[in-house]
Image: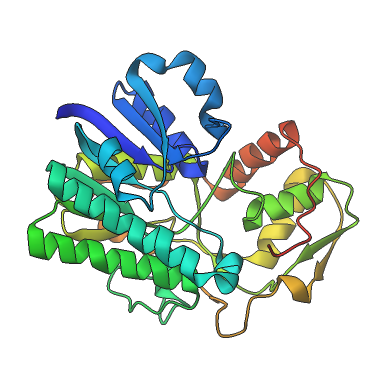
Length: 327
């Protein structure tokens, strides 16, 4: 086992690619693990492959397959587990896909870690497991109340991770990010959905429910939290929220993006974009006092600054996708 060898699952994705780059820049050796595809494509890491091959091993497999996970884990002292199905709307159509990827995938990580005696396992949760806030801000003691199959699959994965810690002393830590945003994010997420409609030729911004409130945390700040949690010895068997302790409604967010982009467009509610009434999480706002106290982490990026950076990135990587469809 190599002390500085780290496995990142979902490494070619939005958060995973930013995390992989940061770890490599800090001198760690990384095994970048992502889903097998016949094109040998590492998506956001394709450019990195050309320059960082010496301290990064690029590996394609399937988080649902124990053998490929065990193979990837060998020799790693730390694993960041980010591989997951994350889109909430698609979880209404295929709950089983989320169970197999998010729950069974986490089982594969936990069991492979146990067999290889991995010293540091960071499991990525989500604020969606809390459901609509029963009080604000939401601390780690808030009841779990999953309102979508996606959230339920992540809550089950968290509980499985806690059970491994309690049953086998598996060195598990759970990071629970609130809404992360920034360059490279999927166009299905709310901020890219708004930005792409703003910078393309849409005369009207088509959105779902405008009333829900979210706590948006810039991706670089989130990555810093991941790394600080990795280094901490205080969080084993525990969970920490990662967020800004601020909330904003979707309507206000859209207006802020329009202002920063210097566009004037009207906003229209599209019923096709609305989630089922009982499944819509109305309010999320992070209580981040615990992570501040344990590892002295706090967000550095104001929402307006993060949005500016994200808008500029999407302008440079402009898409013609107007995100008209739920799936």
